[in-house]
Length: 330
Figure 1: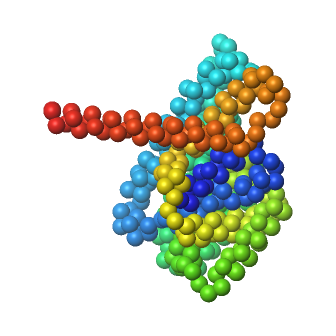
Figure 2: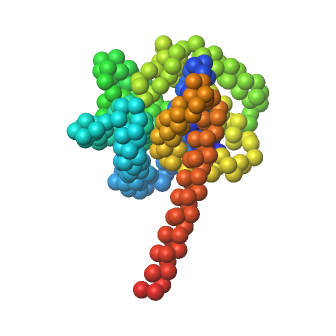
Figure 3: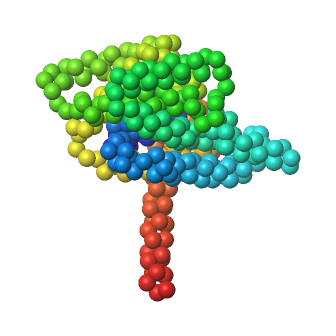
């Protein structure tokens, strides 16, 4: 359910929300995914299977969907670019498309307009590999020392190099630190109820909220980590912990669970959907002169994403049934 809630925040965060709400959501919604990934990491399983199987598993989970979704978005973007404001023609369109292909392989998705959200997938792939090797170390103090080194390295990279590096390794090292925090939360059973846990949780929520709202934007994609990045990390951890602690006590929600199982569809298409909705909005007489309400836009994007999810499930089910039929009759 936490992953489903997080993907809802992705939709809302990209819908043109007010600046104070954007500041708050960006303060924790991407770190939440890294923390959750570390929380769900199965050390014993991957220690047994080894790095090759782990890398293949993560490649299939993140990188293959990344390229498929990126090129599908590019195909969708081409006709839109012909009728949009820029209206590329001839050689301009070819050059424009080739530049987008370059940025797909580069992974610098701030240049790709309608599929920016996909930056997260190769970044999480790198973080997962870094985390695997980090978990090979038995000494917890050495792990903490290396994590601190990762955080310092991230700051050096972002301060010395203004450009976004291929596949976001500068964000990946920070993501590895968040993954370790998530793993330690699970390892030490920090989500289990304890004496005075509610009072402590309220304090954590207030502390995290105060930090996020006063420390500036925390955007891992753009390497904007607030005024003081350590405070930014603390705020992200506090609110992420609050969210995880809260949801683990709620009754199972089928809607959020369903969303959590199909996060790739939202990550892959929400930017393109928002671009289309914005284009259609300005074409409507009278309405086009007003700002598109972010609540309505978020709801419409969610409904379209849900439609794609149901279509995908139905198509996948039919494909599986056809495959079984041909296997029986071959």
